[in-house]
Image (tube, rainbow, N blue to C red; front, side, top):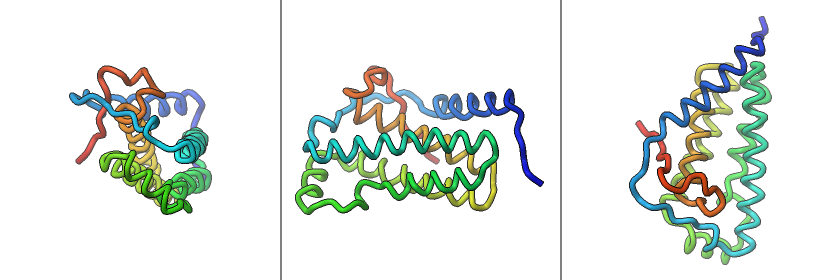
Length: 168
């Protein structure tokens, strides 16, 4: 039996997922430190390409969640996992430059983000709707947390009160 969702329900689901991610992010006290200006032009380009890819995949994942397309969710989430910048073929100099520019908190958030994408892919392979929604909201939360702490120059709306990642 195939699960289908009526469009009004799908819109409500999308709103709930996004609202939940925003509500789960309490205000943070410390001032963010943008890392973009500290990156080499090559690393800036690589990170920018990765973020565009992640953004496109996130949109497709949401589409898959709305219509119950487990295969689309699994494929796109796996692609997000696989785009992990540290797993790419970085030169030794790129690695040194990244470690110099990126604080440990950034690297930790990035690693957790990609592991969440992997868990989302696995939930989709197991056709677990509830777990897929949970991990998708965690992905959105991860994006907001990272952007509010390390990319306020690119996302100035996060200046001021920034969301902080929800943890258990």
